[in-house]
Image 1: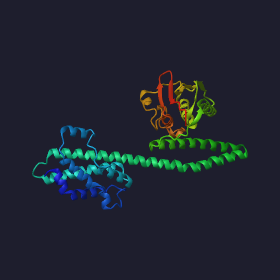
Image 2: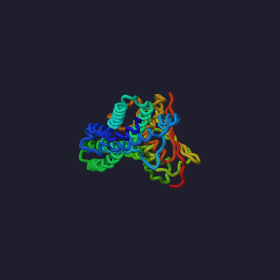
Image 3: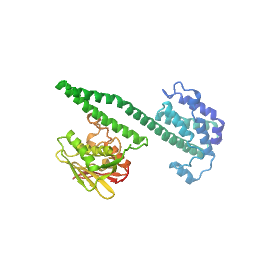
Image 4: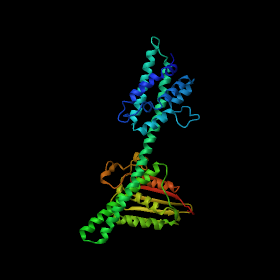
Length: 375
């Protein structure tokens, strides 16, 4: 018997074995009823049977093996994609999802081969069946991963939002204690609370920005007409106060009046300068050069020190990336490894671009921003 006919005839037997295996995938499957355990399994099997009955050229077979199968007609999701979505929401992990397909493959082939005895099963059917199961697995894994990532991003967003209120209370209380001037020890403790609160606020802001970009919302801007020379100079004054042992130079050339989000531009500059302070040679200055021409403004942050390796430079703007000398030091630094990523997202939000270059003489981060004339 051809495999497609066997699946159609003995579909209930196959589904019973699917359900029995799904029930072993704990703890997610605990207390799930039969319908939930069989979630879209029948539709997946019917799709496989339909694929087996459809004629296929060698070219189409090769395209399918490369992930270029035929698209959907009158549907937004395949049964395998919907199955993955519901499994993710039910608390299954990706290994359990893949195990379902592995068990389904073995179950169908074993039952079919036993049914074919004493005749030999059709080899082409077996090949086509494996291709169809692989396609369903790929669709499921992709949708499952997307659902898990979306859930994680929503959780991060809620966490960042809910942390703001208690953090603001801590900062306000610390500022009140400092203003009381109730002795040197109280003032010192309040100052430590204020500094710690500021670091927590910076980490929380980075987390919130990262979460917005991963949800596809982008960096939030409030652009106004500003002079970047004044905006960036103010930020560098604060950075010099935080790092009195480091020399931070500023050179300004040309007209820097335009429409940007001043607070975000300060954040971009701070992330680049702090990166240079952290990784650059300690006995050389960090140099900031801001140049304005008719259409663009260019911000360059340069530092001396060891060259960044090519592999690291290629992913320097990826989120959660650290320099090779700081891997695994999250517990000893004030960074989540998001600074350069957020700097690049701020540049993109302003329709600009950012790039990095590094050699034995110098490491340079350059931001090019179009000059807008209206908010």
